[in-house]
Image (cartoon, rainbow over all chains, first blue to last red; front, side, top):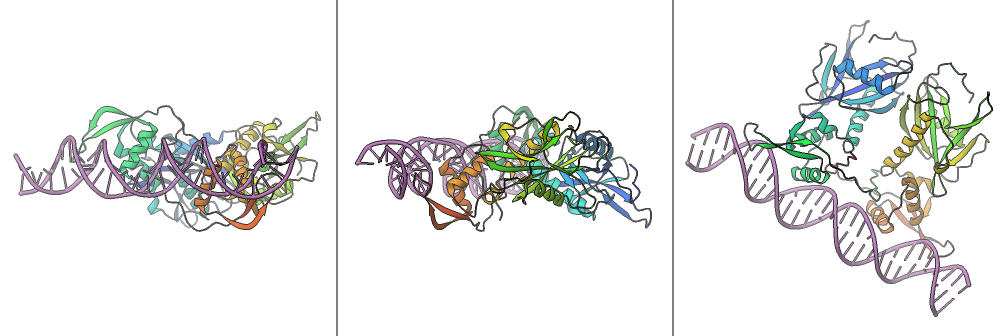
Length: 226
Length: 226
DNA sequence: GACATTAGTCGCATTATGTGACTAATATGC
DNA sequence: GCATATTAGTCACATAATGCGACTAATGTC
């Protein structure tokens, strides 16, 4: 992906927020950009310039594969950002957030690097907003799509699953409550395998296997923060 | 707003889904377009072509005012749509959904008209998607922003409030449950006025007046539809 | 005054949630 | 072996949230 000369108007960019679990928190993939003038290095969210006629989600997928080396296990559009300045001087940026499993989080190129959310380098203001909203988008949809399961191997322990949820949500959960909710949703089925992880009691392995059922509508919620 | 000649590439459009309460359901504002060739009439969601450097939300607000004649009481970005065909042949469309109170739903120009969601004319596929997601976006955020209150006059009865919620959600609510949740959220305060609406017991008038308080985080939800 | 109509409340059963405490099975140190 | 640490898995109970029927209250109509 070559830089666009400043001043040239682009159609728009498709920016990617690739996230992966790492060290009990989320890490985001950034791309190195060396400024040709002052030789300073800055980090940016990877982006792709739009091509006419291509499906938006496909453009995003291409950008994700290019930067992470693998297809994401889940991705969704976050929105359009056009206000704060973009590092590529794009007028408008469409943002996709993508989740990449732990194993695939190894990038070949030296131009890409994973950063823990707690250790971010300075970003352009527009990209700060993108990152912020992307993490929020993941958390908001966590209960609607089985993303946490897809980030784990085919079989996993319930503790691993809980840790994945805690990592994605950014907060701790209570063990008994977590398992109760999980059982009520009938989302996993036990295998007959057990894993002994050094010390402590061995854990039973489960696999993702959602049964039928759907939630009844709720009355109303008034969760206004105001 | 002039039509763009076909074939000319536009930067992108900002499309507007303006909604208003009407006859116990939602109505959406459409704009009349007469095809210069075959003289057929078709209806489209209003849109504005982007201008360089303008804040996205401002472009949307302009488009809303132009078509409805008033500023919306609430609006938010829904997302970017680029796949299915757009009536203006735009490559990309950014969509904003806006809510307009009942009173302001009177459009001057003959080129605009409110359509009940149950009586829609055929729309371009991309705009169908926009409308679909816009209604969903409103419902999803109904518990986070006091939109229903802003659609009502400054004082209102609790029955009116409940009807507004039912209209926005598209489903019935149980009276006692609704009021209980409302009381728990401390969102309204009673006035000393009452309204007698013909037959039936007079209803007390309330005004919107949220107290402090915020929700504690929930454990996890597994609401997967799968 | 009987009845229809709308407002407003209560009570109760059921379900959901938060949380501490308990038991189970393994490894380690002595 | 045996006490202890460590992780897995479960229970029990209190509290909160929800669904819902049934009741009372106040008004207009006939």
